[in-house]
Length: 252
Image (cartoon, rainbow, N blue to C red; front, side):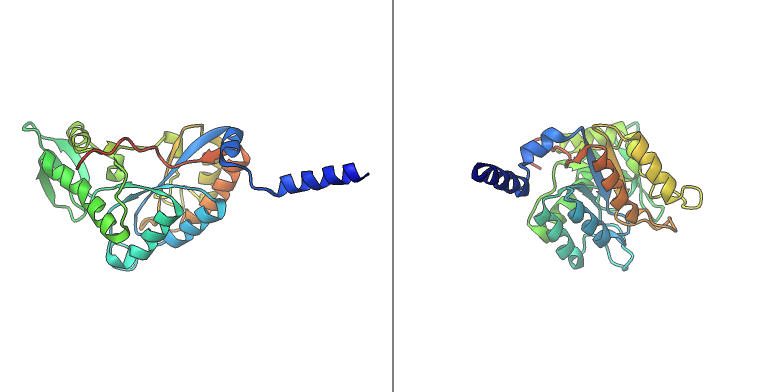
């Protein structure tokens, strides 16, 4: 009887111990990569709470975008938010400084870059690099951490010349999987949250990169709260989450 009691106690103690990270990884049926672009930051705190509750690490792509508060996402007022995300172990990449659109390459090897206010600039390779480096510099000033050598073009739209310039200064572009487009910027009347959630749960596959925003101007019914049931549902299906692997950092 004593032996049985000792065995039961040992089993209970073992069950109460946390599962080692390597054992949890072995239990995964697939890995997903959640990425979050700055957007207007309206739901930034709520999304951070969801990630913490589910113990999910994401990759944030940061730009100096205007926020719902009237300031910008990489202003000093947001330093506390970004420091907290760094402390939680998330990853970070550049989303450009001015969040413009890379429209086309020119015959002389430059890139047409359309700003949010409609102005069009012609950028050389060095200026493309500067557009990617400026969020990196500001993020380090705010948090003490450099960005990972990753970037995402606003809207996912780039050009061969832009990609070449970015690679030359050490940044690898990251898009998203077709199923990973969570649709948080689509009109909510035509694409209700419940339908977006069902689609994501049904179509995401191992290795997919997911994309959403920390806030969107155009959507009336925000998708951000759906990240909670989405992550829970994907975990129930056996998926684990990880930050994007970063290539080796070059001197920039």
